[in-house]
Image 1: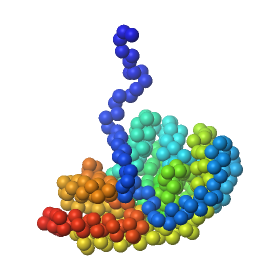
Image 2 (image 1 turned 90 degrees about the vertical axis):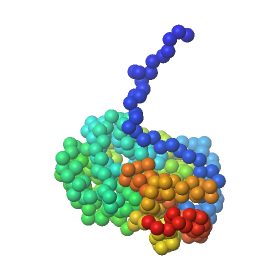
Image 3 (image 1 turned 120 degrees about the horizontal axis):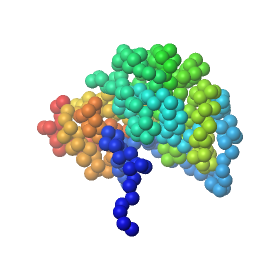
Image 4 (image 1 turned 120 degrees about the vertical axis):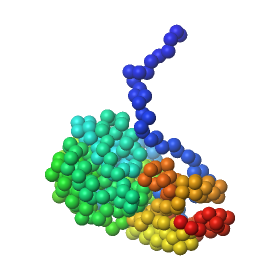
Length: 370
């Protein structure tokens, strides 16, 4: 066949500014890079799950009204304010594609979850960044200024933040909710890690009809592989989002897994408390034994600042050689000397401590001083 077919009318080749995340296999490794919930008691829970789940459900479509009613009751929310999705990726995609298609503007705390940027590019949404400062915080005054000056926009706030683990004060979130309402912005609160914190912003849904809460069950409920999330919003937004049938991506088996884990709130709360204790202990170890800086975290991971990009890379490579995967963030300007570690249960982190002490011993002259 002569000539070459042209994709110019179909493909947008101008994607050089989008940072597409390259996935790396974590097979046979302790994965401390993805912020999954890592605790031995989850294995015990899963054995009970196997005994209670019906494999025959894989042959049938779920009946959404029944599933929505059941999930809403478990969340203690009105069904008219809840919509369900196949993970937060699906929720974010539908929110941006529906609510963003007219306003075409997004204000987002940066850095943030990669898909907010890639989906914005996909839907032609202009992105305005509210950047992290040198203290690894988002200055409220700066955010206020951006919101005052911006046209009606979708505004994304993560609490706690998915890169630093830092959390905002509830008073600041309430202030921003009111400001967004006054300036005709829709506020999206991404609460992936909120169960590791003591924040409780859920009443904002009743106070402001422009607030949307996105909550994945991947992190604090530990079912990353099941892909399940929910969105809380006023009835009018929920009804509008539901028109686009995001529910069709959720399997019957996923519903069963989600309901099982939501019913185990007491056990999961204890697991999260174990992780928090392990996080605090490991943070103290990093400061006292390694001599590095730890950014205060309200999540199931910590951000560690060393001194140079080279040292971060050396540490990452050493841990990979020892079958431990971490997240090197030094390619980002805000985190040029930083590495991020998911915190597992204490006995697991004890093994990580041993590896780090050996690393320091091997590099004593280079790494013991900040």
